[in-house]
Length: 359
Image (cartoon, rainbow, N blue to C red):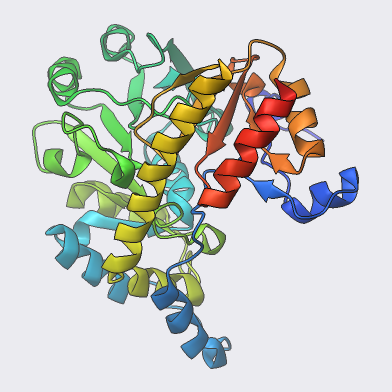
């Protein structure tokens, strides 16, 4: 079987295993998962109610144009509906960008480490990933600007960055934009933007319609608790969206995802509850990790890194046997770090007790 070399050489994304499978493998029960940056509260109750109300319509195709959700997003964000592309998670928006604008051999600049799907999707599309190392765990915008060549078609700015939880400042981002050629697409992946407490953080929405091509990616997976539905969206100039819609498959988001996301948008109480729980949880965990004597790295997201000062994969195994699932950062180039997301208060306490035993 003949396949392109750039496809044969792909390293697939390795996701965390479901709790049920890990419990079977390790013979444990009652495990808690703090490895996938999920909302600890669960889904928006309004989303669940809306989904339940349409279960009798599963024989119908969903809205191919995502009209109702797109209209509601446009009103909430004060943009035109033709500036929105809705996808099967924000991952699909990344894939649509690659399929629409990348030709074989084109270069795409991305932070290193960052979201692993950038490299996978670019390589799968025949593009060449150009990695720029972080500086003190922060995206090196100056290094990215220096890496631009005539072959550069796109630049990913993961803000806040996963897995480090850091942001770039608005001043630095605007200086960076001035250096980017007008034909290069700057993709601001803002999956965790709602969690940010630092007021110096730039917002992708502010740069739509400017001299440079900026695309903002958002998701319903994190603050709205709809990760299992797989729905997200991109904000961009209408001309960019028009081209992506030509590539996008019809019915790319399912009925339940559309209805759930629409209801979640109006659940302000749930959003406030999520942010309050995450921010208080972070403050608690920072203090407790410091008491254990380990170095942690403050974040602008719902997760953060901890330096275990030894093999993180071994720590993962030890924590797992105590019923606590964390994420080792070996695949991201941090072999001694683990990443955890904030859980419910009782989950956070259980993590600290397990951490003490492991240390």
